[in-house]
Length: 281
Picture 1: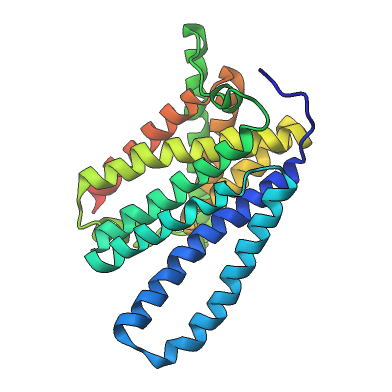
Picture 2 (picture 1 turned 135 degrees about the vertical axis):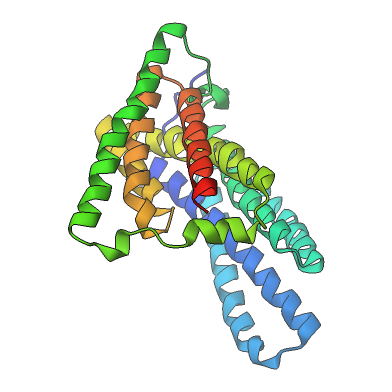
């Protein structure tokens, strides 16, 4: 059942960004606090005090915005003990692999939780609003749009080589990821081919694309979500290819009117990248 009430999508997005940043910062803040308590490093006290101000600011903004868009403050409160619990586990286990897994889950699952809280006000059926619905057989043909992105990605790589654009050349980023997870292929597969495709598609092609489209138009929705999708990969060598992939996934999402095909293609893409990277390393 679609809600007829008008919502401020920009304010909703503002709430999403600040609450997600609050979660990330709170996790880092707790790590600093625990390190200070158990190492008694007096030099870190100033950093903790400054960090405390930032944490309080982001918390206040999140609560203020939640009130403005009529989201229960409980949605913010419930995240705090979860972040604290995860932070304590990370600190006392002192495991690099565990920390990476928990941090990824904290950010991705936290983002999905926030999005669901926002969308519940738009529509009673969050799944349908996001596009998590099955498609008909005749729409499978649109999966082929993914392969149209590859010539553009290859052309981009050739331009990098031709103009010798060092900043966009690959480095040891993939190796660092494999090393940080002790080359545990099961965990790498779980994070890269299950968690990442689902969460990123819900965030970018499910939520971000749709609210930008409703505020502006389809083309702007595709461009905005694809650019941000590229930028969040951080590694310069992957930003443009990821943005191109984002455009292809957006078009698949539009043509099929479902998020499931883009999740499937995203999983396939990451699996392919995982295989190639493992063979290269």
